Length: 181
Length: 134
Image 1 (cartoon, one colour):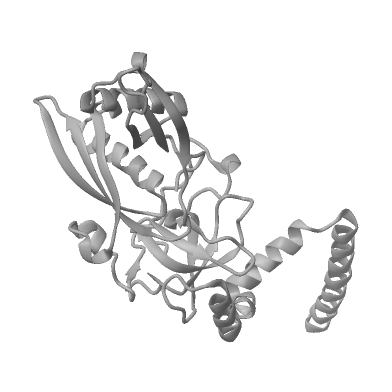
Image 2 (cartoon, rainbow over the protein chains, first blue to last red):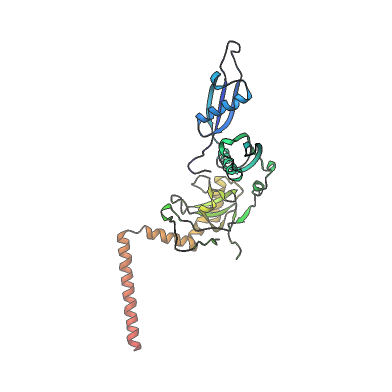
């Protein structure tokens, strides 16, 4: 859940080679990818399709570009994301797990985590595959620890935060108290 | 001192931020991560709220994980959460604060007039006692 909207949106882009005399009905390809907007999505579509088939934007046509929205944005799901990223020394594959209510949220988390943990910027990340995975299929301890119907934990560090932005000041007269349980 | 209030499914919490939602009671129906939970309440949409934005109360409700609205409503009515919270010290304090903020100038005048009347009677009685004690 991101305030102000998700940066990365999921798009379905459908395209094919333009019909020629040799091939009047070319195979249509469909890709699901993440981009900040539809223009970028179409550009990425050609980038990936070029690598897979002998077609490029100059001799191809986009048939559809639709945004895909989350079907159930009020249920928590476990997402597995397979990424290919470029580090300072080369390309690597990674599998990451996230718990979120929407796939866009999980992808957002992935970009944030790759940036913070591995210093990988977003242009150097390619999402290979994403999937909603069941609790049994989760591999990471961080997601598995929340798979408990009787989950119970205290909030050990709680600070009194200003209740509205107008009470937020740079300096405060008293030191913070984090023992608010 | 051990931690008295734990985050669990069914825990009742009070939203503190943002101001538009502050003061609303919610029930935790699922935990997304160690920093956020899925909260729900009859009349509100189910949404994700960070633990930093809510304060846990002493009350819990018996619900299954991700309870449906009807189930949640029934459980809340059975536990009588809203009434219990309003009766608690915390709830009373919030109600008093809200009443004070909603006072009109006339209400403030009435309160001041009553206070003056009361204090004058107290003073009269005190002075009488003081005189008789001398």
